Length: 438
Image (cartoon, rainbow, N blue to C red; front, top):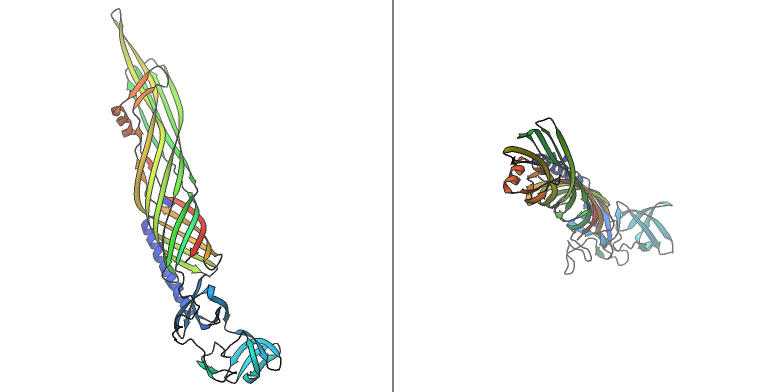
């Protein structure tokens, strides 16, 4: 059963998740890719990818580690660069830039491998003002136009920091806000009962049995949470949600009796009640991330504080008997009567408790900063037991011959023998919503 998940299971799962994520992180550090990034402002950044998300790329460059926001990127080239060369005689040649020296460039075109002297080049598309392969190491080359040294990497100036090229967003949007619709699944199926039997006066035997059985259905709800990434594979999640379940109660009551002369009878009744269980969880989780920039998975687990409110209204039956003694012409006569009562019972309890939650999720990228988020999650909350409160008052009997008063002593005697109602607030939940990074 789902509600049998304990804290040791959750802690073990969390430790295994962290181990997996750390190993994944080491593997990602080893498999670096050389890239050239062309920004919308015309800047070019060369480096090796350390991490890439739906909103940012982190590069290892000669200037150190740089975070580049994808909204500032015009295009990205891996390993080789497509280029169009315009010669001074009007010839246009397209191909892949292979290598470059201060005197010429070598490209692979449909005509084969061509070596072109820089003095014969009018311009290139894209325009490479330094006329060099950004994948090579030289820091300065000679411009074919003015033959003066030009800077091929970012150098610190008053306007440009080596970590922050002009026009580049360096922050990586580590925060995410999610709002989701949820469908909880929770089963509240429990039974409270009491039974009694015996004999009294003219009753040779009597039996009474009363039961309350429940069934439930959960309503759609909501969930809001905020996340913070403090590394490329690990983050924290803080959120809250809700689960409301409507409960139906079937109350059955059965009595039968036999008089000293062998005669007897029986009576069966069925009544209906209702109730609700509202649960508000506030959770703090550690989250592990994996996947690509367009499809990203996550696993999470953590502590949960639950606020619960349980209200129930149902009925229980009572079997009662009374004796009427009277005299006629000096002779004593005794009459005994039996009856049953329909007594309202209720529970109204509010409580909080500590528990846990565990689950997994999937993000499908819709844009640089927005994704569709789908989660499944199990919330574990400890079970509680509550006694039914019998309502005091005066009630008509089921046979309509007598009115009975239920006082505190009678109510207490029945409350003691009626088994408590067990409430399990734990539930499974599926959510679908929008996640925004900022």
